Length: 192
Picture 1 (cartoon, rainbow, N blue to C red):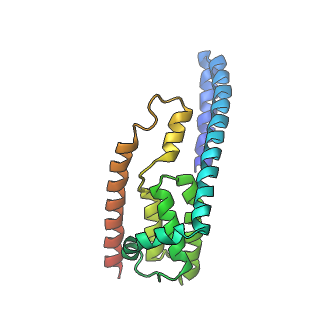
Picture 2: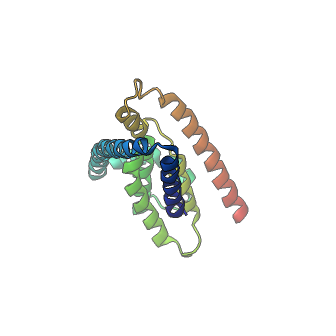
Picture 3: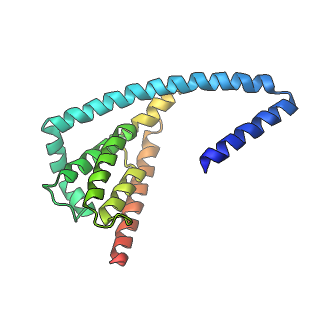
């Protein structure tokens, strides 16, 4: 749907700028947007590379097992169907840790890996399992302590105080995660 809407918006904007005499402004905006997009991409590339590397080091060292052990009560509550010795248990743990650290872009590959493992275990290929629904919720709510992606965006756009959003992010992600977990648990219970 968006691949239809965006071209329509762009064409209408261009036609409007031609009739309103703002063709020079739209041309300048196109080049300025391209410059900003490249700068933002480079900022994200550095951030993603750094945190993906840190998460890989945590995975390869005993740190991931220690963090998984620390999260055991929470993961067991959220994913009661998953065995602690299962590979997907550690994948979910790393995904949760990456999200808590605010590494949305680095958490995505970890979440996709965990979702693939959950999908392989799911007997119904047309219906989400309870664990798959919970993982989607946790990635969408994305409880964050350090919102590094948002801070990186604000820094690249010249914000005077890029970390000023930390406290509001804590509040919003805690409430979103809490409400989402309650909703998923409720629907799992009534779905049985």
